Image (cartoon, rainbow, N blue to C red; front, side, top):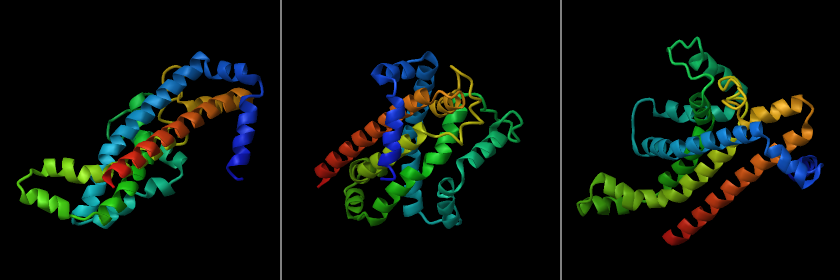
Length: 243
């Protein structure tokens, strides 16, 4: 009920002007540009997370090194840190007065970095448990038969990790398309340039255009649910093949 009641209210607002009003709201030039930028940045973030998150999970599970527990704990910081704090931190680090002389503010690259920061744990934490329970017998047999480390990973390890990677990727994408706090400062919110969908929705609500805000929100929700459903379907099919 906690999910369905707000969702029903959102749908009611989105379609208060009928289907034509809904499509008119999401087809406004500024809305289209904000949605395109959001989906592009979310997709790129998801791809990077799928690769880097898997690599980090492998290192944390398979390797032993000084500071491993500290790094493992750091991975969870985005879960606990308010996203607006992350936004301020990233703006301080990568803004015009960057102490490391690297400015990514008011650019899509800064948006991607912010999204990477808040979505990194999803892939790591979905892949890590699978690696911890995975038997090493297949990998050892592959090495014994003369396979290279890369071929062993590609043929033995990676196929077993694909369902978990897809699950983490889906969660990363769903979180990224709706992210606001971490990107609101570093993006600059320039219409038609660096304005993401969440900032556009906030602008509409501040202008008392609640129907438009609800319409764009429903569209984002639909995209997120669609991606989660597709990734879950691929994950189940892949697991069935492995079984």
